[in-house]
Length: 248
Image 1 (cartoon, one colour):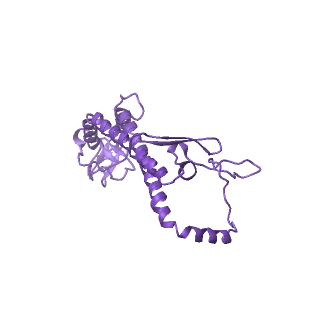
Image 2 (tube, rainbow, N blue to C red):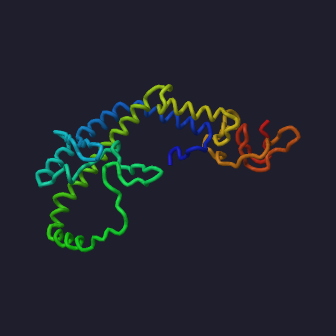
Image 3 (cartoon, one colour):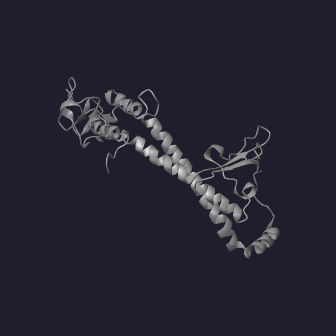
């Protein structure tokens, strides 16, 4: 696998990785154009909710795949206000905290949190029997469309997340999350003698294939004053060493 490392690598390996990433920056504009076109094709469907979680407004794209699915859903008798109520990730449902006297009983969409033991066997059986003869129809006309709509909304959000990420990546080194900002952060660790997870293999100790990148940490500096050379492969504050080698 290309560049198959995370936190443990050599400086030379990272330099190759950095060069590859910088080459890819030139393709970002074209990638964003493609993603935006796909985002436009998918379209959007949004709901606004009041404090009690009741839908107050729906907004479906006039064009786009989601808008078409929504109109089909309504044409087949679906009532989006009561049956669909999709949410974006910014409208996540969560448990409302209680206080020192009472545990939370509500979700943020206004629903009371149910307890075990609903004692509803009799009505459940009757409703199940009443539903059975239209179950296939509900699946084809409503549930299948609902799943498609929710999947497309999720897909549209993922596209927007990727667009936002790419727009950040191409910023300069002063922007947190930009490629140059991230690369500079790694270079700081490569230059730090105390951080041994990354091996600074500059000069004669070059290890471009990372063969010594995962050697164990040395317990002392091999070849230091009054000390023997390394007894095994290990990493020191001044790079990796082989058996018998000294860092000096």
